[in-house]
Image (cartoon, rainbow, N blue to C red; front, side, top):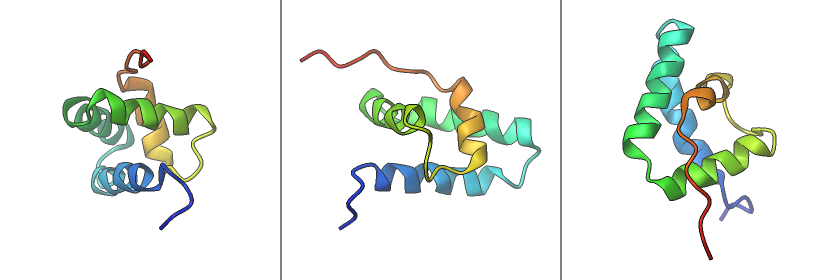
Length: 78
């Protein structure tokens, strides 16, 4: 098992990116953002932004570009 609790999420985002990297950069970033906005629940997007806010280590460059257009969910309430 990976020591990084976000490893699976990073892998999933990068897999989406690999598909969209065949398109022009702006179109690819928009496609990634649309996919994550449409199919990732708020909890997943919260974890995604934990990775992005910590520097985005492990995420492909197109994912980081797409992050600007991904909806940031509200913080969880304890």
